Image 1: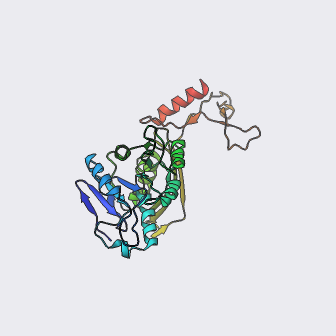
Image 2: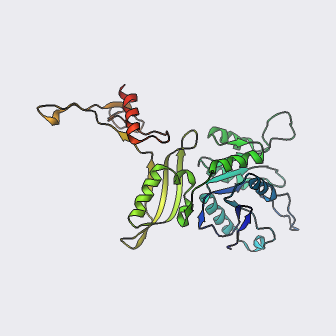
Length: 323
């Protein structure tokens, strides 16, 4: 299916519909979905339509929304295969810049069993924002709904933003994606934090400069700074059209991290330059295989500060490590 739906600025892609070939920002609305009983009647009211969509409109969101429910009035409920639905949701989750988990769990009508699995798969991704109402049976305390406590403990452990209202949850999602960034075709599979990072931009610009074309991406992992604004590292499988060989290369995994600035401090030996002393710093590294567990290296390091040049970073590292 190729139809999408415009709502005063935002664009909805319902379950089973084609993914956009051009986008600036995308939010996936994850969480329990109302089911139909044997008579075809919904067992609960959807929290996505119209509530979440209305709030996003009020917040001025003008990007794409992946909405894992059938288009209202469509026939997809009867002709959409479960395996196709799984494939669509998986693809949409990977393409999303932010995944909103709103979990108004009700064990009889919206048990959210699939939501548990999806949250477990994505809560470490750096893309998740979590929200759920508090338990209404204890109005004077901020307690989670039944069976939500474990999700909320995990959210807190991994610094996933967590809220008690749908509006706050969505407002944080909208603020997180900001103005977004234009991406086309396979670029749409690269989430905003990685797309905007210096290491990715350097790699991608070099790839394009050689006449090669990105044909597909799968992000396996990425780690952000405490504020979430700087990507410190990522692991990605890339499908690349190699222009000079006229073929697609698919077997490469790319591991990237922040660029490192290093400084060589030395004192020239007037008689033999090869005997010139060089300053090394001794640092413990968990991965070291040296006899004492330490490494000896040039003063070096990376910075998560925005707008810091390699030269400034090198000066800071030299001062920090050598005084």
